[in-house]
Image (tube, rainbow, N blue to C red; front, side):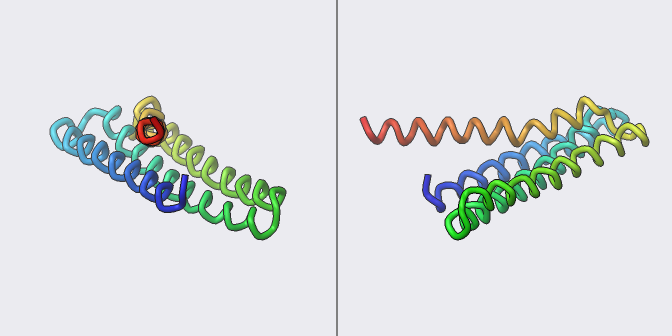
Length: 133
């Protein structure tokens, strides 16, 4: 996968996450008391932020590996892993302490960008394999 293809993959994933977020916000507009939908919105926002920062981290990691070796690249990725994981844990803690969001809805929102990214990856792989045949 070339750099341009990778950036378009992340961009498509974020755009589809934004579409899901808009749909969830419209649903919240019609049912403001549904804490599952509020959790889904919060999870989609945090999931999109994590996806964006993961894309930046992977892009920089490739440059670190090329310049400093694999060990430096692994350490660079782990630093980003803990910060993104911390953001998720803080969001979950906030949901549990305040009760404003459904934790299940929030977790579904966290998972949505990953599922969309895997779907995009499968679509990209099929397009590549169709070109080779």
